[in-house]
Amino acid sequence: MVFQSVDQIGRRYGELGGTLVSVRGIDLVAARGEVCVFCGGPQTRIKRGKVNSPGRWYWETICAVCREPWEGEYYEVLRRWVQEGSTTNGVESEIVNRIDEWRTVRPLVEVPARRDARGLTFPRGRWRFCVTAWLLYVQPRFSSYEEVADYGGEHHADLGDIWTEKRVRSGVSKARGVIQKRGQVAGVLRLEAEDARF
Image 1 (cartoon, one colour):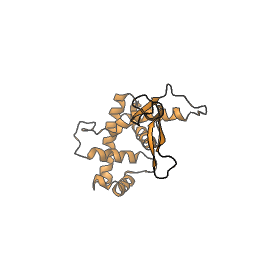
Image 2 (cartoon, helix red, strand yellow):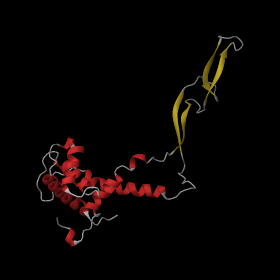
Image 3 (cartoon, one colour):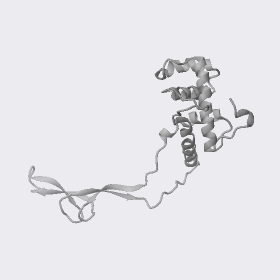
Image 4 (cartoon, helix red, strand yellow):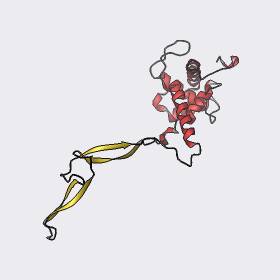
């Protein structure tokens, strides 16, 4: 996977961000339960006492094999192999590809940056603002810095009262610079000569 622009990384991050919540893992356990600590047998319940006299009998749990009073321990039997279903239609391979992409793209965006591309230190909390502004800006529904500032001020007020057009423009530029460097170092971003500068 190679991206042709920095903004393409942001769009892909947005597309992948919410998709992994519903992915269920493959259960490698064939069976689980309790077994007898003495012989490994299963448990069973039997009646004890005077069976024909109401109120004079009770249920007792014992081992079905050695007939000792039940003392169990937790036990799991792992599958010897994981078998692919007969109705495979490529969904599994698509999920694996998305996971691989997510593992590549996520650190580029989410790891906090201490310095911007020019080496200047980010004030505390400013990296989150810059990345959020950039991720909003690269989405097709926003066509200007002003729209991003309006949306961010309304929906991301937790980042502070800094959602102005000028700050959004600066934040987007700083986030692009950091993500560009990270993408090139990771080998997932190849820019044309004219796109390499902002």
